Length: 255
Ligand SMILES: NC(=O)c1ccc[n+]([C@@H]2O[C@H](COP(=O)([O-])OP(=O)(O)OC[C@H]3O[C@@H](n4cnc5c(N)ncnc54)[C@H](OP(=O)(O)O)[C@@H]3O)[C@@H](O)[C@H]2O)c1
Image (cartoon, rainbow, N blue to C red; front, side, top):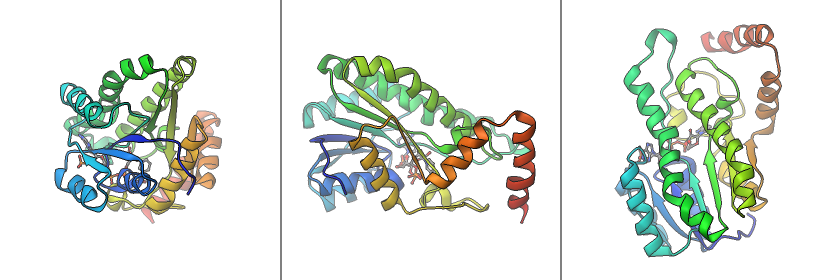
């Protein structure tokens, strides 16, 4: 693992999966890390493993709570060098089982949570003229995929948000990155009943993310085989794209 440049970090969505692994990997490199999510006990367990990890539970869909959490974190750690937003929910949904409550909740957490985080941190990052922000989106945000009407559109929104902010923030000395993973073995993918090509362990995902962030890449996407296939799909005209989805993806769902 690369030696990291950060002294302090805030990992949001750290109670499981990719966020949890990132927190452990940063702690191993002596980064003072605050971990947030709703499940307090999981965060405390991280603190039991490394006393440089501090739990600050928060529900990212609540703007005031996020802002209060950030104030508390600044008191504990001082300036934050790196914020990684990993929190999200994934509700697979077809047209026939479209669920309005789950759709709204997904946007409140996956996208609204990022707005709440940015609203809280932006003034102090801009004042300090440094810092790194990483938003975990997904390759599912590249194009509309089956079962992914809600989740995919939250992730497309995050990719667009990060693209829009990149140049503005760069002028102010701040780096924003968007992380687009393929399939990673976490609680999130446990519920999937379809083939997940090139699925990887959270340890590998964390390593890729940390390496990309150290190099200040705008996009950190992996595994490359899946990323290239989906990026190619992005430039296909609709009739060809829908033909590929029908003949490759939907057929594999049924098998
Ligand atoms: N796994 C994959 O294949 C994959 C692929 C592409 C992208 N991603 C993205 O990678 C990120 C991490 O996913 P993961 O696979 O590690 O999933 P995970 O294990 O389910 O972790 C999701 C995290 O989000 C937190 N979270 C959910 N709702 C929250 C809320 N309202 N407030 C605060 N925290 C909340 C969860 O904690 P609590 O429930 O304790 O709050 C948990 O820590 C997500 O953005 C996901 O969309 C994952």
